[in-house]
Amino acid sequence: MAANAAYAAYAAYAAMAAATAYSVYSTQQSGKQAQLNANAQSEQAKLDADNAASAAVVQADRIRRLARNQASEANAALAASGVEVGAGTAININEEIIGNAEEDAALTIFNGRNQQSRLYNDASNYTLAGQQARSAANSQSIGTVLSAGAQTGMSWKASASGRNGTVAQIGGNS
Image (tube, rainbow, N blue to C red; front, side):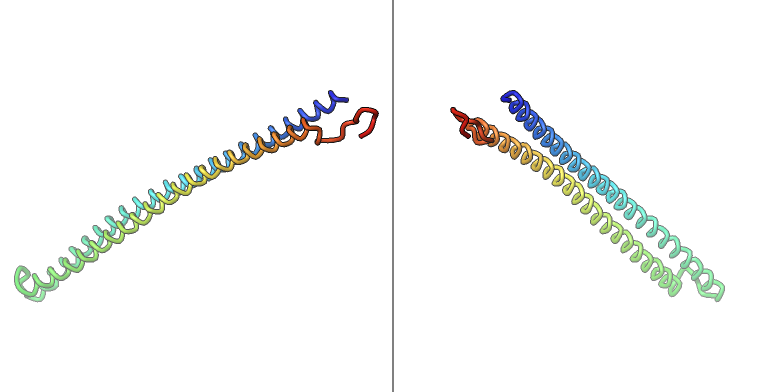
C-alpha cells in the first residue's frame, strides 16, 4: 500500500514537472514569436522609411525637370513674340519658375526625410516592443518555475508530516 502511495506521489511530481516544463516552453515560444513579429515590423518600417526618402528625391527631380520644361516653353513663347530671351522679363520669368520649382523640390525632400525619420522611430519602437515581449516571457517562465517549486515543496512537506492523507494509527484508529 505504501509503495502505491509513493508511486502516486512520484507520478504527481512528474506530472507537475511536465506541466511546468510545458508552460515554460509555451511561454518562451510565445515570447520568441512576439519578438520575431516585432523585428519583422521593424524591418518593414525601415524599408518603408528608405522608400519614402528615395521617392521624395525622385519626385524632387521630377519637379525640377518639369520646371526646366516650363521655363523652356516660356522662353520659346517669349522668343516667338519677339522678346529678347536672355534679358529683362524673360530672365525674371525663368528665375521665378526655377525658384518656385526648387522650393517645391526642397519641401518634397524635406517631407520625405521627415517621413523617413518617423518610420525609423517606429522601427525602433517595434524592436523595443519585441525585446520587452521576450523579457516578459522570460520573467513569466521564471515565475512559473518558482511557483511550481514552491507548490512541490509545500506538498512534500505536507506529505512528510502526515497531513497529506490519513494514516492509520496504532490499534487501527485513524
